[in-house]
Amino acid sequence: MKFRIRKTFLFPLGFLVVELVALLISCIVFKQPPAKAIILAVMILPVIVLFIECLFRNTTIGDDHITMRKLLRIKRLNFADISSIETIMVKRRAFVTLSTNDDFLIFSNAYSGFPIMVQHLLTKLPAEVVTEEAVAMAEKAPNKSADMVSCWLAVLVVGFILYAQLMMGQ
Image (tube, rainbow, N blue to C red; front, side, top):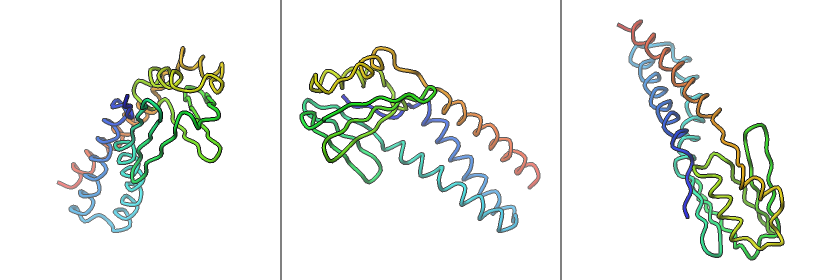
């Protein structure tokens, strides 16, 4: 089974990238001070990197292994080598850590279908490494929407700034 970052987060994040690039282009076209364009360009870079990282990130649970693909990186753990599974909740953010003797893998509830992902993972792991906390999280995984709401809020704010920039430039 293949799991990806939620589209409900990717869509506003992609929209934010487009707005920020449009804002940068408008700064250049309307001959705004170079410092403004440079600061904006520096601020855009982390957002673009986050978007690309989230866009390419996926996790596949196979018959005998789990593989996480990130931008320019692939990490694979065999289920037989996993020595522990730990779960952590911080507010409504859930993290699952899979550990072997010399490697680890962490994923969060930013993935679409996170409860199904954890349930499917638990059926593949050796019974002795599955903890009660992991089973509890699989049964009642938290649904996080604050990142999506924050992203849409940023889209609105940048949209307003872009609108003001375009109105002043005419």
